[in-house]
Image (cartoon, rainbow, N blue to C red; front, side, top):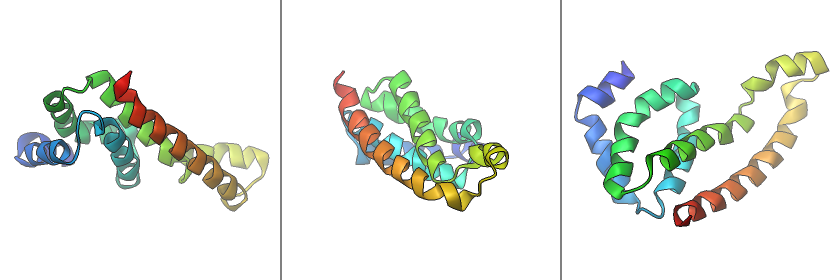
Length: 129
């Protein structure tokens, strides 16, 4: 249903223009990276997220002249970034290790901060390569 709203109404075109307006070819990948991380809290499934978002980020990338593969890469890394803050991937491993979420969250926050800084710098520089 959400996909249909973006694909078959003017909402997708409006959001395309929002991304074009707030970014340049040099900042687009960094903005998509951050956007994907924020969106990961609202739609936690990577495949579903991309189906919802593709109708407006792909046209925005095309309009700005940004590579589609680089855009998809920035989007995927943004999704991975926030998986360290809400580590549902760790549920099975925590049971095996006999740990609880509260025992790993401090460490994951440190990893998240480091990862966020390094990858933000990387996506800020990525358009130049």
